[in-house]
Image 1 (cartoon, rainbow, N blue to C red):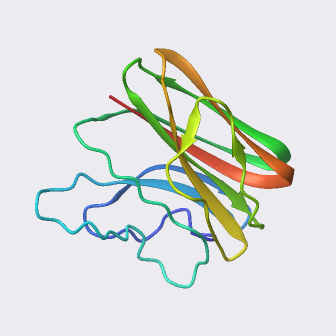
Image 2 (tube, rainbow, N blue to C red):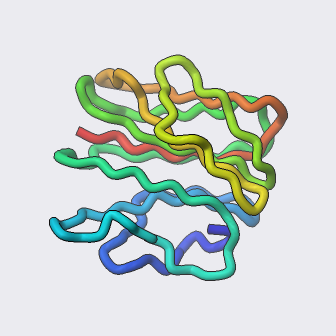
Length: 155
């Protein structure tokens, strides 16, 4: 969402986790959706801020943990989160100031093709088999890249 760390969210959406670098932010919004609500969602109502967005829908679970980090310039971005066996960890890694997309470490699976726009990219992923305790997520870029990563552990 560009430079706004307190975005104007749509009805029912709330900020769960946010990380910020100069001129760039990565924010996790959450919403508990009721039956009959549209599958088309737009959590961020701010206008004029360039970037990329990814939406992941999960059901029959609750949030147990969230984490975020930023890397100012590196080939590798690593973030760990406390999870549980037989749970689910979802994440996003966003390149800022370029459209580089990463290679995900073993044990991480992309949930969609990476999205790029306005000199940024976002890659959505899940942890294949989370463990009880610390789960490390690693994204590796082909060239030094500023990036933000956000993770949510669910059960």
